[in-house]
Length: 280
Image (tube, rainbow, N blue to C red; front, side, top):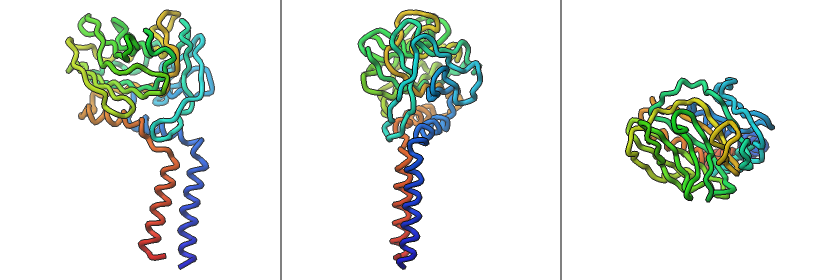
């Protein structure tokens, strides 16, 4: 009996140590894998040591976000489940500081889509762009204005803002904006929870998946650039998702991806339960 008990305890301890030892190396990978499991069209985690940000989905050159000006990297944070997010993009608010891709490879035209990102602002009360898109009226874009985080849309030539949410504060926040262009609705998730939905007054254009600037309005030197940190930017084509609400909630749940060490604890608990059942 004692020998069986020691054997099971050894297995549990070995599992805990193995997973615990690899936590620092695997945490950021665990989060990246969770994002990739939801099939983003493009995704950047900014975990490179420096320089440009590589798309984690296909790694195509056209989807690389080219760093410009004062844009840099700093250590990021952990999510709600304790998973390390590795490195983040850092912006000073200078006119030339951003990461930008001139023309994403996705063909565009997604009537249902979502944009996900983490943000920490140094100027939440200001007027600044976190993400700038393409198309008429800078469609789509995400900005802070009037103490609110807003999705900036363009439909039928009419510019409008939607999906109002709290701005990116000095604390890290996780945002998911789910847009149904055909139904003219935007649903916002903040830190894993539903913040609210808004119906727009006009039909909106599908997502063009064209130019993208992270940290500002335009890839060229311009005004209204973001001051703070942005991480884990992903854009999803949800046109074939079937259940848009379920797809949005799954993306929002990235906020709660569990820390890898919890898997070891689950393994340890399971083995101890097995020991009790066997009476060893």
